[in-house]
Length: 453
Ligand SMILES: Cc1cc2nc3c(=O)[nH]c(=O)nc-3n(C[C@H](O)[C@H](O)[C@H](O)COP(=O)(O)OP(=O)(O)OC[C@H]3O[C@@H](n4cnc5c(N)ncnc54)[C@H](O)[C@@H]3O)c2cc1C
Image 1 (spheres, rainbow, N blue to C red):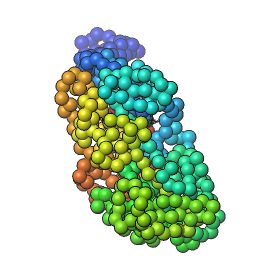
Image 2 (image 1 turned 120 degrees about the vertical axis):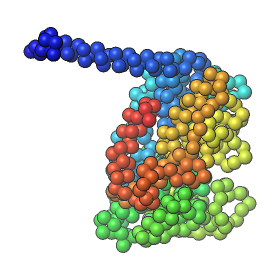
Image 3 (image 1 turned 30 degrees about the vertical axis):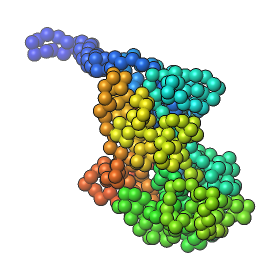
Image 4 (image 1 turned 135 degrees about the vertical axis):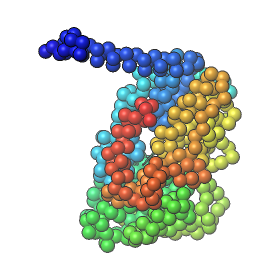
């Protein structure tokens, strides 16, 4: 069909389409051209240790920012898991499979992948050694191998035996599945004592033990079985959360739901066959391990279901390296809290769970850290001072019941940093549940890990 222009000239639909396509192509070329000229020409071999949330996000940003990118990721796992989904697996909202993706699909195309684990860091000579004794040299190192979960520090249970004696931990993928099965079986118990606890070290997503406690309580309430169960939460600290506004609200919620909270209690051991948990009662909370000669009061608690969290630290190869902060427990990497550059080694940057940043260890924090860390690394490669400053933002969506979430958002020095500042931050809401259950996983896989947000 022909159309007449004002000048009387005829245009076919095909001509219109050609003009349209040429316009789109022009816009793409201009955009790519802009990208091309805005890319840094800095050169250098970058090695990223750990291809988890932080490592893959960093690789995506760096390969976008550098024209001559030479990036290698060292990561042993072929399957990547969206860890915030573990809570929802345990709560029977997500299927276990839906949090997984092959690592190969997530690592940006031009980035090299060494499928292996680093065993030793040698920052004085700019190389790492893998567990198969391969020496990998670098000009710049991104150290992001996450947390190590020290299950061995709780006697009587191991990561492999989770579920035994109805002892659970949702910080492990299989553990989350076993916990879900146990939750499904709780109604068969008819009644009993459910015990939840957290840990004394810095941990990833400190909200998770509260989430599973409150979801379990709600699961039983929904089935009109709540009155048959006694539920207790043993906290290692003397609050349930900081900043205080969130801790106060959580403690109100625990009160309203008749979950007794006991503070300054640390799980020492479990007897899975007798279903007894032993807690050290500390005079005041501490993030240090119990000294060998210490004799704290201990209480033995009978349970029918126990959920615990193992102590966490930096992986041993980090802890035993010159990159760890020796002045604090945990062996976390000693970085500047704003630039995330190592305190002594200026060609090393670290963030995510392994970094000794004074904020909560979450994926939400990494979403903000990664683009700043990437820009700072590019500046270092250009022999400039890193100018990007991370403000400590972290977020923890605490599921308080099926259908509601308390969205805790904060930065350094417990500063409240709500995304929607005009609504009360200490109110649990349905919209945050919708975000947690339907929004955050696609945002993670299709946005954050691709360096798009
Ligand atoms: C139960 C649970 C609930 C959570 N809920 C939330 C939430 O609601 N919101 C939120 O924002 N965050 C949440 N998180 C936290 C979030 O998942 C982590 O903060 C985030 O995954 C940390 O990213 P990372 O890259 O630092 O570590 P990881 O994602 O753990 O990745 C580290 C990578 O390093 C690799 N690695 C380890 N050792 C070596 C080695 N020697 N050599 C090479 N590679 C190595 C590992 O295989 C891994 O792939 C939750 C976590 C859990 C477990």
